[in-house]
Image (cartoon, rainbow, N blue to C red; front, side):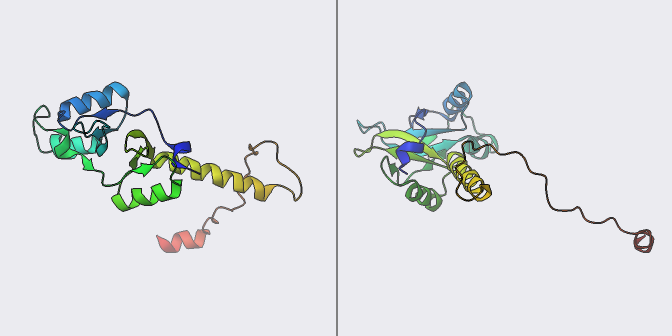
Length: 172
């Protein structure tokens, strides 16, 4: 499974010289919670950081700074490494963990931004895999499943027994 199969290619980008206010307006316009900051001095416009809505709150609003004067590059989370399109997903997940990122820019062999890998998408991938495994475990041996949907089973766990009257009286 390569990153190219799971990355989000519909991404919003911003200049490092853009203001925090510009970033907030872009986030609102596109209904996103983060923006990739691109190095504009390079013709490839390589990703250099990620600006999340939480940074706007922590670094601008909570400090009562003027969002029109704070630059994106001062509040973005720098990205030291990006994932390559053909890189295995789990290698990219390891990079995300090392950099403490919920989103990781994906680049081609020239370093040009191609998309981003999002932790929520990885979670959805894992969830789908667990559902497939559960269906496999429930299937009778030798029979193929034609549908992934399974009827909802009732819980086999019993609720805890209600305390007896004597126990209630002694606890009071």
